[in-house]
Image (cartoon, rainbow, N blue to C red):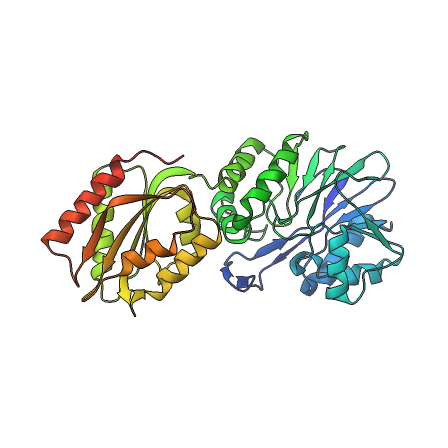
Length: 389
């Protein structure tokens, strides 16, 4: 990955990993990004997962061509980025670590040392002169850990954005940015929309030509597009008008209702209709889709006096990430005493600015004339209601 003549990429691709953070499927691997800034003094931006320390250190030495680094800037202490800090400090004993005060406390916990005598603590708007360029540090508390800083290089107009603007996937795999960036953002950063909005306000005051995140490609063209998506995601606003139907089904009857509703919506030319079987789809993709579209239909069997386990997980994933500003409808099924709709609505009670459809579809074991009429009424209501702000 080419950054500039004076900023070199020294990160690594990980194709050994199957689940990022132990839960997110990453069939195309992950990139752990690190950069070297060459000037009178040299700064290395972040490290990589400890399993790739040797490759990373070799990349650094190749980029330095015999020179020694002066600084290691640690923007984020999550181990996929800080895992090789100790190896770096052992390899380059004259180097200084640059990080927030809270990050140094975490280093003590992770490594048994906070590198006393070799540390430079930085705060909001502190600067570090390297020669012809100056780095400016901005705090990014809870994007998505409390110690995070981001760094602006005014010479090349580069924002080193820590985990912000990252995505799943290694850099040697060609794939669209949007879907995997959305899944990454909603899954990992999505709870912290207020904090992301604060960071976006700081970024708006900078002249940025490139964004270099800790995962995924450097963003160079059409930055307004990426910034706009981050603004939408962190404001919990729908990306586009559309309906996600998320369902669980034991014997196929709720599945049939979900598919029939989708067909009705498509016949009415609803802008976008997506259907997800929560027992089989990627849960992170389902959660991201719920945040993408303006309307959500939750269709569940009644199970053990509540809802099916994967529906319970799905709704918890939504509420943990501040699901809000959407229209929600319910389809419930039960051979006796159906309560799924009531339970699902109760699970959403702390969510803000939800509009509930007037029509709730109640299925008693299998679709019949009455429940099919309710599906038709719900389709009319969903296609006729206005987009949510």
